[in-house]
Image (cartoon, rainbow, N blue to C red; front, side):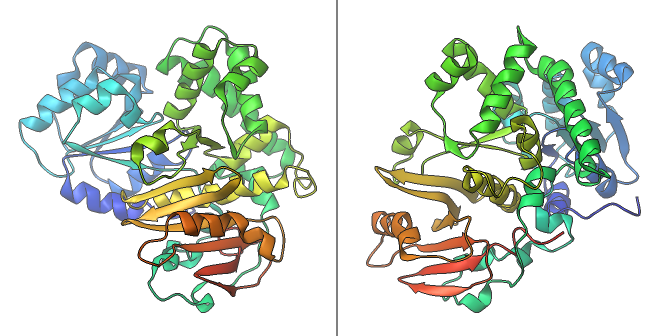
Length: 409
């Protein structure tokens, strides 16, 4: 394991294992959950439900599988019935670190699982690598935390040159990032999608037509970083709307997509608004959409793909604290690409595929500030661009380069 790259989530996972009886780490297949579990739990028993013998025991006699603790159980979504046995085992004696569960499905979105472990477990999300994490920079080096300090200066933003386009093509799965060339990476993504469709997906739900499901995935990839209209999507995919709705839920449960809420003061109003859709991995989305490496920046939809690349980092940042959230904001003709929430404070993020920021780039940001001003104070906004300029724009707004989030490889 000498060549294993450290993960930002590692310190949080270590603390969680010292504090709670059950820790659940979820994320898409191939994000590195098993590797991380092995690093932190050396010396404890490890079992994977990918092993048919272990899976059969979990289905036949789940209590016997839990007889010796502490235990790490990998791919636990393959046997949801195991969760009731885990509940009984934990209730018999709550010792921190007793069970580390990993799964390639978001267990918090699976009704039976979330009910079984309520009050007994903490859920941690392991997204694919983000660019700064892959090149070995600490989370403090990306500058997002500093955006929440009371007194901010452009000197607080880390310097660095931006090179975003290669990160769109490669994404954040370790095997894709380490592929020797474009052809090998394309083959890896093809195999990943095939495995997801023919194995992981069918473990979560019965899907009548894998061809229809893959067509939906490709349509979604071509529309990343946009608000989602399920009726239009169903029409374009040639699918009934209820089927489209179910397929989207499966993609979200399988940790393949994220749907961001439109941030509003009222939670009910926010839930009623259209959601913004993004892929959890930019490289997978780019492969599904048929993007050619090296040609993304010249496309008419380059701005959306830049947002997708930025989201790769935002989701990693949010995964490190349960109080962090990533939203977007739209009201009428005004929009802010991302809204970061932490401890009740908001920061608006605008992403621009340009090297300079003009006054017109602030239109949505100023509307956002006006909408959420409190006692005369407006929330901070940052316009992130592909250049190096870090500049105060007045009224708690800043022009900042994307280099810390999307560095040169």
